[in-house]
Amino acid sequence: MGWTVRVCSSVEDMRVAVSPIWHYFGRSAPSEDQLESLARVLPAERVHAAWDGDRVIGGAGAFPFELSVPGGRIRAAGVTVVGVLPSHRRRGVLRAMMRAQLDACREQGESVAYLWASEDTIYARFGYGMASLVAEIDLARERSAYHAPAEPLGQARLVPLTAAEPLVAAVWERVAAVTPGMFARTSAWWQARSLADPAWRRRGAGELQCAVLEVHGHSTAYALYRLNPAYDRGVATGTLDVVEAMGDSPESTRAIWRFLLDVDWVARVRAGILPIDHPLVLLMAEPRRLRLSMRDGLWVRLVDVGAALAARSYSTADSVVIEVADEFCPWNQGRWCVKAGAVERTNAPADLSGDVTALGSVYLGGFTWAQLARALRVTELRPGAVARADALFRPDIGPWCPEIF
Ligand SMILES: CC(C)(COP(=O)(O)OP(=O)(O)OC[C@H]1O[C@@H](n2cnc3c(N)ncnc32)[C@H](O)[C@@H]1OP(=O)(O)O)[C@@H](O)C(=O)NCCC(=O)NCCS
Image (tube, rainbow, N blue to C red):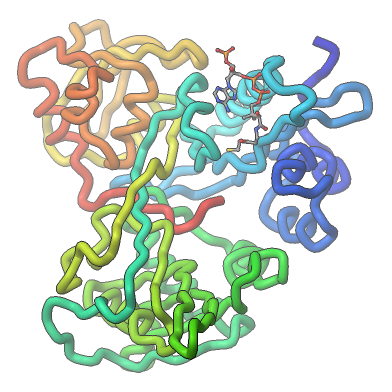
């Protein structure tokens, strides 16, 4: 093998540990600014690196997150900056880093790991299941009328990024607390990432703008966006790219989107990471004009099946017994009886069986047991078990993570 995996012990270590993924970003290593920004939210000891002598050939990090799950919040690993140099690919480096990372999560009591995958073929072999879909829209602004006129609500104002945190963080927190898939953003996260606007983040687009909707003196919605002005023979052809937008009520969500859809000199409004059941679909007079497309969103791995299942809420007083197969984390294998307030191993006959990836898919509520059964991803061993499991696992709201971390 010739190489070993170990965690970083300093920011300097981290600089080299993330260099494999930076290679794919088109650079040899992060700039000082990029490294400093990363180090503010990613502790060095949460970054694994594969060393070949004194050279790093692969790296993988895990943000220490508080993740919202149906009915609560849990500590979870937000897997990030995973990369292996092209000179060392397909030799098992990623596999070794995934092994070390999941073992570390387990030791630290993080019962779930989750991520955005650069390619959908990579992570299922390590037990990650596709856990949500995300929607992208590309809407001609002139076709953006709502199906019914809305009473104006509150006052939208543009806020300098330096003054935005208290206004936007309060809204994020209210939405995150009830939306599976969102994580609690720390002040460091807001400052180093969400509200930071260095040139390297712009990728040719305009500056990061922040609009806040205030109702009776309180922020209830916000939007972060960039303008990309362009003209063709004097006609505006530019775009408004929504970075993130949310409101803490249906009315404030409708109002902040109206604000975005009404910005002048914009031909198209684009947004890339919306929940697939975003209210816009039903708000629009011409939903087809959203040109909505979908792709895989979050991937979830139950690191400790018992603890992860016990940490979320359930919608009925029923119980189901699930036989879980888990080759990569064999401590999860076996039969689990799942019911509200008690998830435990059992010898009782199983109602359903499936791979641990299936649990990842249903965990946040992004997919149902019925969908998995129709795709032959789980087996119903007792008639009616799929319907019972779906009633039990049904969340109030589907998963959404507004940010690719
Ligand atoms: C994806 C990447 C990390 C894989 O690293 P690697 O060290 O080559 O992976 P491994 O050798 O450990 O492969 C483990 C298994 O995954 C498979 N695999 C790895 N990457 C794959 C890919 N992109 N597509 C399909 N299968 C893949 C391997 O074939 C191997 O399969 P096996 O266990 O059946 O033999 C690496 O190619 C890379 O850095 N790619 C560019 C950056 C990237 O996509 N990072 C992920 C960000 S989310």
